[in-house]
Image 1 (cartoon, helix red, strand yellow):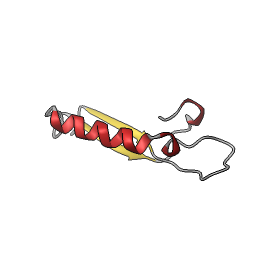
Image 2 (spheres, rainbow, N blue to C red):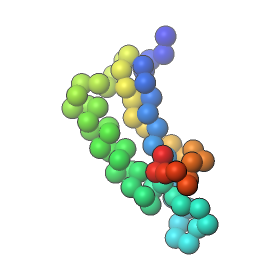
Image 3 (spheres, rainbow, N blue to C red):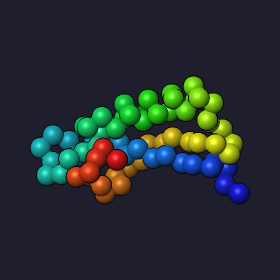
Length: 67
């Protein structure tokens, strides 16, 4: 069995100003990740067999982001 039941990833890729494609980090994904992580802890949903919230690199959903 996996250590976590659910693993949530937030893209925090930042291409910089003027990039052709949008960047999730510039659309607030880091703040969303921080909030989700805080809520999971507050609700007691973190730890073995529960939920983990992580940042990731580009998930190639830039136009749908933040992802």
